[in-house]
Length: 153
Picture (cartoon, rainbow, N blue to C red):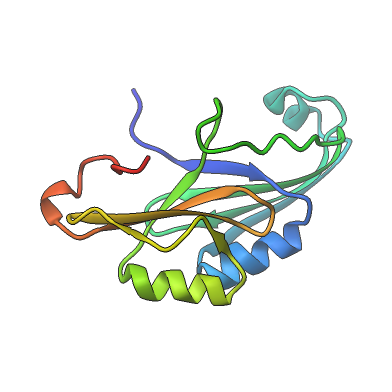
């Protein structure tokens, strides 16, 4: 039985820089940190890779977790995509006060495709973290749609 979403995982080139952004700018709480030095056969089996050399941090958001990995071995490839490409397209962060949050994140260095789009009952905009991963900011303005998926993605 599926009981809900636990976490979304992203791979980055610099875990410390990612923590600066996700923990310090976005306000997620760091709840776990692990280091794998090529000698963790259980992790290798669970992940499906051999000789994993990586650092990982688990961050808690108000309603889910974000797992961030910095792999050294195997050597990562850059597979970031456009939001329309197949695969994991983006993570969506629900916000309150879209205009203020958008401005705060612009000032913190996050890039966006443009200003927030007002859908009336909601607002959304796509941007990128410091590593190029796509993040949607999504604001629900009408409580009646609180249980519906984002109209932007």
